[in-house]
Amino acid sequence: MCGIVGAVAQRNVVPILLEGLQRLEYRGYDSAGLAVVHDGQIERQRSTGRVVELTAKSANTNGQIGIAHTRWATHGVPSERNAHPHLSKDKIAVVHNGIIENYEALRTRLTAAGYVFTSDTDTEVIAHLIHTHYVQGKTLLAATQESLRELVGAYAIGVIASDNPDQLVCARRGSPLLLGIGIEEHFIASDVSALLPVTRRVVYLEEGDVVQLERKHYQIYDAQGKPVTRAIVESEMSNESVQLGQYRHYMQKEIHEQPQALADTLESVCNSQSLVPGIFGAEASAVFDDINHVLILACGTSYHSGLVARYWLEEVAGIACTVEVASEYRYRTSVPNPKSLVVVISQSGETADTQAALNHAKSLGHTHTLAICNVAESALVRLCKLRLLTRAGPEIGVASTKAFTTQLAALFLLTLVLAKQRGRLTAAQESAHLKDLRHLPTAVQKVLDLEPIIAKLAEQFANKSNALFLGRGMHYPIAMEGSLKLKEISYIHAEAYPAGELKHGPLALVDKDMPVISVAPNDALLEKLKSNLQEVRARGGELFVFADADSHITEAEGIHIIHMPEHAGLLSPILHTIPLQLLSYYVALQKGTDVDKPRNLAKSVTVE
Ligand code: F6R
Image (cartoon, rainbow, N blue to C red; front, side, top):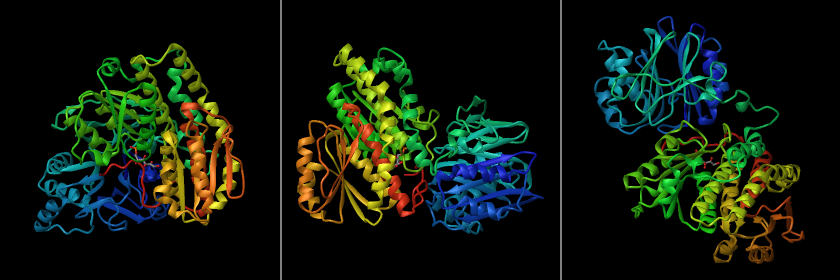
């Protein structure tokens, strides 16, 4: 959600900034801009739309120090005047990711002091605040530190000044920012993918850090202004992992990466003969001994993985589980249970709603916390006592795919470890589950082989405006996930129902123009589901049924059957996710939407 890049070097930094922005575009893509210092002046270029527009505008811009930004609008519509960087009196330029909550009060004060606002953003107050201190003779660093004391809210910022061609100042609180260490050049970025062409050596900043960067030197100050040293780490993210390669879109690439992502996530477990709590951290065994309930908090697709986990945890581990949408949880009065394990699930580990929910749970006295997350250095991972990292690799497409299935794999591991610790898993069951997990990547690959069939099927959705998704039991959340994917990237209105609910209302929607997509694994609920499907067919609804090979549902007029290659028992929700991802992808292609950057959305939702 908004991407920041900055650089101070001996070479022209504009190509570095533009390349970095391209790579961060998934974080926001309604406008972009950059500013460099050149001959004692700030040169700024901004444009609405994508980074390519900015690139075209910046052909004649150059400078050895600069900051750049790609925006996902919060305050103020997407427009050139609201695009970052924001300037104060042509002296200070600022890029910002996050939200300044007290910006209205600051804006009133700064307006009274004679500052003229040229945008509707909260960011502009930061530029003017820094300016007020800077013109009083403070260094850029001191002026920034002074200004940050007055800000309430979340920020990652980059700052330059027209009369200071050697120093770039940056800071973070609540929004991610890291430093890139080059040879006699330094960089800042919202995430490491932006810097891969120039360096892999990075420093992850801590909450409240402020940094002064020069070409040959940098110094980090903590929230109290004390100079501190933070570790330099070599990022393991490879340049190839963020390249499209043979694929047309990142979403397609990421769908196809699922066998590997699952294999990587399960690697340590599948190579061993038995499951140990230690995979969740050193304190896991003691924590798991002390719990009688699991409370899962997450948003969007990650929330759906939590919903599946509830079925597993209650059925296999025999432990009560509640799953809450993170953005709702903290605004209701709930009854805390100190014996709950609070599990936060997130691809990015940055989602503001999930972080706030976790903090709320802690404030209620919950101490047993576990993060299931795809980003090792993220805020959520740092905030939790226990962790299990999914190893899906970078997910660039805005619609989450491989992050979801790896979350499911991680949650299944949690289920098995808790079941074992609670004496509900025999050695034979444990080894049978491990065998199934080892086979999972192969099983997923076989489902991916259905791609041509699903691509063909998608043609029938191109002219539809609505769709219903049905599932039962642990496949109901998979229907929800299928419906979310279709909405997100094809803009077709879709809703998911547990199939038994149809007759309680939604059946009224069913007619020949309403495609009904059904997840129909061969499980205990199959016969019930078949009756629900008959209810649809009797009203003229067209059915698209993802059935297991042994589900015995036969193709007929208005009933299209897609046979899944194999039945995966408890792991079936993972397999049944794949064709729904492919369906959304191919429907979106039919509709000609921007698959990787659907309208109005952004990856990593770091605002409330
Ligand atoms: C949907 C999607 C979102 C995210 C949600 C939470 O495809 O990607 O619904 O799942 O914004 O994000 P994370 O998992 O990063 O906390």
